[in-house]
Image (tube, rainbow over all chains, first blue to last red):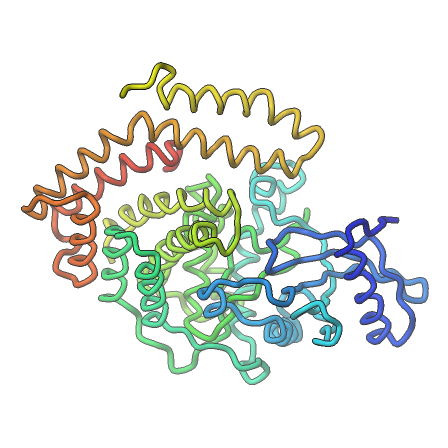
Length: 341
Length: 119
């Protein structure tokens, strides 16, 4: 069995053992605890809880206390307790989302944290797009993503915790605030935001649950296709087409540029599966608007990631280097604006 | 005062080559997580090498175009600030052919430095 080596891992294992005992109402032994991806602030840990000889494969999602989130992260991400409730609502509505099991309490001392079931599959786009075991899955992913998204959007909003409502105009204002805070003049992003502002779609009478970060890299795939949708921290209420547009942003194709639906299929294939599964009819003009928006959004996120390093909130070469990826979206924006609409 | 050779670009290229060809494979064997970080670093060095080589001429071209577009002399930063202000206010937009030619040329120069493989 894995031994928890670092003092932090020792502490996490001890607290998880106690919390798992409360949840399962019987002693639980914590095994194979290991820290997965994630920075200092938003952590993911994988572990097994062995309860009465039964092994439960689990994930801990955790924001340690007093770790610096930037102003922007605080304003756009939901807290872990809200994320837990969104996951529960989505899971109960039949969405392929991880099943949330229990929350930790402030007295546990792990910060905002909850435990969910671990699902098999990988998220690494490079492997999914090229490796042999995913050959059959590759042909299914675009359609599956359309079906699952229709289900997410059909989640009864009455079962959700209070979520921010974010319409096109709010998003544009938020990106302009970001540019102002960064301080460097950005003509291409300004051009795109004005283009978007002039054409912004009318708010819906009935906003739906929007995942907010529905893209390749944020879902798991095994040999059969998509197993689960991850990363719900940007969930909000708004326009369902936002998720369809974001999935088609060129940055999530990882080189498979002729397959807009996350690198795995055409827009039409994605939309047909979405509509067939009960999602509303997709208006191509609206979808194009959200794809342009998503492209500008990702570019400005790149600038913000670099700013986390430059402002000293975290010291990270990786974050710094992401700033130089913003120009990729400027190339894409100029192409997209020439396509009109 | 001019420095002796290697030029900045030549020295950056030499460092990037060394890290890519010798240091990264050794790291991959012992510390894969650091191997990944090293690839990010090598990629950034390659950006700096291209910037040292191509950046000054690209900036000069951008400056010259902006002076023509905005009809006044100022620093590159000031001119971009003025252009950004006009674009946010909608005084210029994508229907302005001279503007679009300028942005196309600027972004073409920028992507050749940041990521020449992007398309």
